[in-house]
Image (cartoon, rainbow, N blue to C red; front, side, top):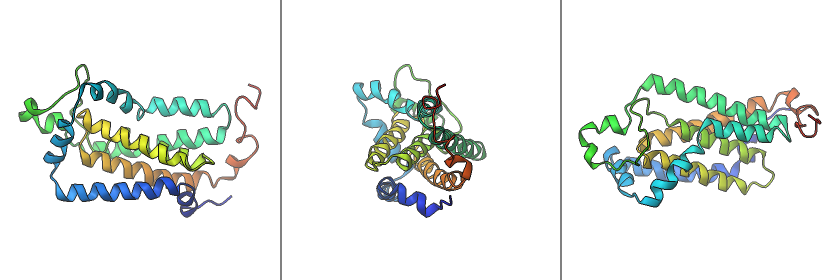
Length: 220
């Protein structure tokens, strides 16, 4: 079964079209405003309720969240679970390689002489290195692409995109990343996943009856 990049993009079109619009808006913001202005604007829009929920939103971009979801999906379809888990693995490796290549400072280190201006969420450990790109954002957008690709009702793609955007925003709100880190993370998550799905889902074995069953249907 031959599946090309165009086939994947067609299947995720609600997600991808809206994503392109959001990305264009983000690029315009980046061209108009400096890193400092964007960071301190986001950081200044803080509240007690946001401090309480943002750490939970950011957890949606954790690897264990995708692995737990993959394990649940495996109950019904090994193929879908493999596509989800492997996409996470491939995009995470790409993100980690870039993190160590760029070795960029995070806001806490970048603004070390302006820490009094920064709002930090109490009790949250703030990292200092390997800022670019945002790994949580990579994971969230990668999972969003796969979920949209696999769901019959493509409207779920809109919800998946909104969740991914929230994860990206949470990384900035929590002072773990810059705007550029999140933008790059979204691009890596989307593009690498699209190419990975077009390659892996073209393999004949993954469309066999064995792989389209899950733990429940296999009686295990």
